[in-house]
Image (cartoon, rainbow, N blue to C red):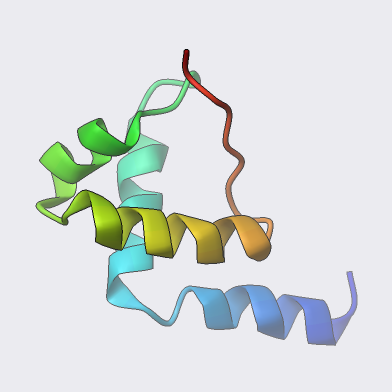
Length: 68
């Protein structure tokens, strides 16, 4: 990973809500959490979580899967 990529990923963590979500996910089981579970643990609304997860996904700091 080059320095530009490292800076981009670290920059993604400059938003407090994103750090809250990452902390929440680190405390979770390996199977992850649903958005509503993240909302309950962080106190953030699901629209805010969705927006921040999109940014974290774009930075390749988290992964997501559909829940049927």
